[in-house]
Image (cartoon, rainbow, N blue to C red; front, top):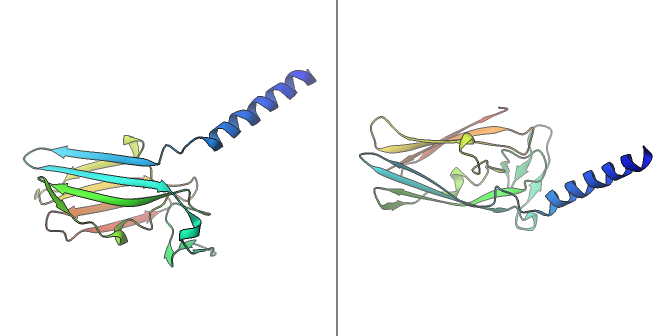
Length: 158
């Protein structure tokens, strides 16, 4: 009995170690596209969070990265959004970093956590995404407009 318990514990340890070494599924390029009378495409590029490039502060209610609330991270974030590219009817429309640079540990790897649709007037795309490192859940809704006047809202605690 003792030998089998030791074997199980060793296997659990090795399984945990292998997931620590594996690349996070949240890192990479994630593309979402919507077609109809218009075509919209959004490319999210993510990378591992490099603490040496940021100032991280811990607070009672929120952690901060570079002076802004760090959505989706109860401690040091593991993944950050490095860029967002938006195309509407083939035209590239700039998305400012301020709309995504504080959204950490995004869940782009599962279509269950990302929804994209056109607005009723077909002049913008609305994207909702849930992100988290566990308990620090949030949902962000981006409204990316054809005219470049984008906006977003963030809800915590989902």
